[in-house]
Structures are given as structure tokens and as C-alpha cells.
Amino acid sequence: MAVNSAETTEKIKSLIYKTCLYQDDCEWKNWLDFCSEDFNYYIRAYSPEIQKDMEYMGGPKEYMESITGQLRKHNIDDSPLKRHGVVYRVDVADDNKSATAVTSLTVFQTLLGGNSSHVDSGTTGIFLVGRYNDKFVIDGDDVKFIEREVRLDTRRLDKGTHWPI
Image (cartoon, rainbow, N blue to C red):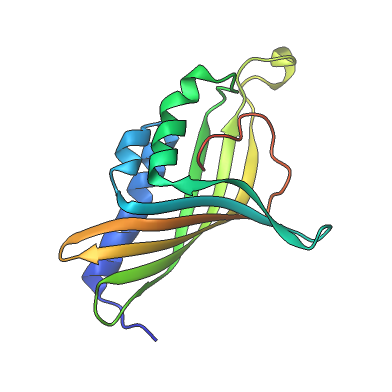
């Protein structure tokens, strides 16, 4: 089992929370700046009906930079998403060059206008529930994401789901 360095563990927790805020505010470049050049991102859920993983989104850093750069050009639901993450576990490798983390995730959405704006506008509800399964590369004091899997419990996603979670 990996031995945790308290300082590295706190740095990783802080990084996860900081990037949640960047994603909440749609500051995609700031989020991606904390990802290594070899970064890969996935949104997945297991479907018991088909007995397989479903992949909603996935790709390397270059793809994520491209898609986040084009989000405002898409026909999207502008209702904001707010991430509430709780880091459950951080495991730092013995050589202090890599780490993994598991974060419980609930994403809330506050509805803006739309078809039923007189009824729904301003209401907040749970958009999805899942976990972040993260992998990190550590180079001295520098910690960066090398992989993020968003593992969803929620399988039915509404419009606007091409946003990174």
C-alpha cells in the first residue's frame, strides 16, 4: 500500500477543490492548466441493462481544449452547474512521483429560463451523482492531473451534458 505524504496529500486535495471552482465558473483553461500534456478525461457509467460501461465523453487534453473552446458556440443549456466534491482518499506512491484520489461528487443545477421558465426558473436540483477517480503525476512540488474518470451513478443526463463535469 502506498504511503501518504501529508504535504502532497493536502496539495492534491487543494488542487481537486480549486479545479471544481474553475469548472463551476467555466474557466476551462485554468482547469486544463493543472493537467499534464498526457492528460486523459472520461465520463463513464455502468449500465446494468446492457451490462457494459457507457462513455459519455472522453479524450486527451488536446480534445478537451478544443471542446471547451467551442462550448459557447453550441446550442447549450446555460443553467449553471455547481460541483460539491468531498475527497475521500488520496494515495501517494512510495516514490512520491504519482498519486490517486477518489472524490465523491454531487453536481447541482440551478435552472434558468426555458419552456417552463414561469415554473422552473431559479429552482436548484441534483444534476448528477458520482465520483472523480483521479490520477496525478508529481514532479517535485508540481502536481498535475494525468487522468480523470468521472464515474457516474446517474445515467440519464439532460441537455447541456457536453460540459466537462
